[in-house]
Length: 236
Ligand code: 13P
Image 1 (tube, protein in one colour):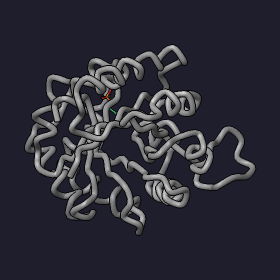
Image 2 (tube, protein in one colour):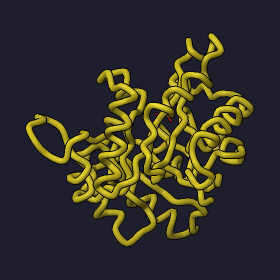
Image 3 (cartoon, rainbow, N blue to C red):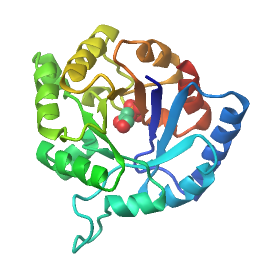
């Protein structure tokens, strides 16, 4: 399976940040990537980033969507709108949205289905908190999140992102990643791409991406700089 290296810019980036995409284009033109490459910028940059990436192998995605196609939902954006803007994937259920916006597993499933209805691929995020891991509940938590949030249609990507590894520089042991990814594989299909996310950097990417059932990475901080992101792509 071809790896997917996805960047999640979170709430970072102004038009000036598109220079990083220009730089990434140059790097990828010089050395063909052995992976699919995706960048999910904030809503405001999707259209510009999609234009900047047009004609290259870089794909554009979004970080969230509403469950409805349209209607009276002030401040929200639908999957169809994101598709029109140039998105091909939508991250749903990121732990920051679960924490900041109280998103439930059931809502995450509806968002994943909304993305699919717009012919986009949802990237469904799951992962345990530090406390849940310390209590020995990581597998049970991830299992319950998967049961509640995976749609019938198997056109999706799953990202395992332990909450305590996000933006902290902490990474689970390779065995712990292997164990959770094996569990996710059992609950999905042999063809589902399973990403690991949480403090992936150029320095640790090769060993993480070589783990069985790890088919790519969802990268936060290190996706903001083209050279770092490219270092992770090259690690494939
Ligand atoms: P970091 O790579 O900054 O730890 O973020 C991971 C993440 O949350 C990607 O969605």
